[in-house]
Image 1 (cartoon, rainbow, N blue to C red):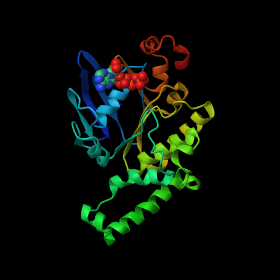
Image 2: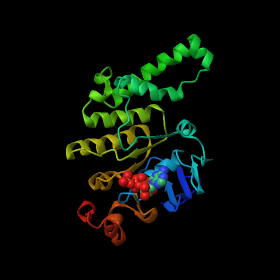
Image 3: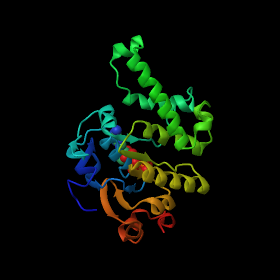
Length: 263
Ligand SMILES: Nc1ncnc2c1ncn2[C@@H]1O[C@H](COP(=O)(O)OP(=O)(O)OP(=O)(O)O)[C@@H](O)[C@H]1O
């Protein structure tokens, strides 16, 4: 992917992070153009989630900088980064178990609720109106992700595949430009993985999201990503199209023991 300040939505300019003596990510240069679906792969412990944590402000890189939508976001707090337009999902589903499907989405939507605390406390008209609009927008979002009929069900009572979709819907509710998905197909059977791929492609096409995903299911990565970056021990060992990655000897070696997954 060409490095171009004008066209990339996200650029990590050689970011690294060290935990004690361990360099978890070294010199990561990730350049992602708008509306692309990009995969971040690599064996366990390669540094993939740490890269997500740097992009989303959980960790500050030890060196390097992160540009998003023309702004330097290095060192910003996670909530500031969410407000700028980066949303994420987590490896382990993190839905609020005592809440309904709708309440889970409403809570994420709250990031965009603009009112000062006094308006909120006293329920002033502008705040009440905004809350009503948010309710309607969340119902509309649930329609779009085909979960509206389950809006009032307890979130964790949903089948696994639908809980994953609800997690993505929660990310969508923050009105992001970019969504980071951490192993969205984890624990899914082939049919659920296929539905997930169709779903991710559809929301990209429909809403114009840019998507960066960590995924171990190679059929999902190879089937949906337009560009793939491979990490191993924190180092970028390859990047390219799915075909280039599948044929890259270093990648095959990094996955030795799991070669079948790559092929
Ligand atoms: N907060 C931390 N403190 C110390 N070491 C950490 C911390 N976070 C991650 N690491 C280490 O950094 C390395 C990369 O971990 P990371 O979770 O990013 O890998 P990963 O590629 O996401 O792996 P997996 O596919 O298993 O989720 C690992 O050796 C991990 O133990």
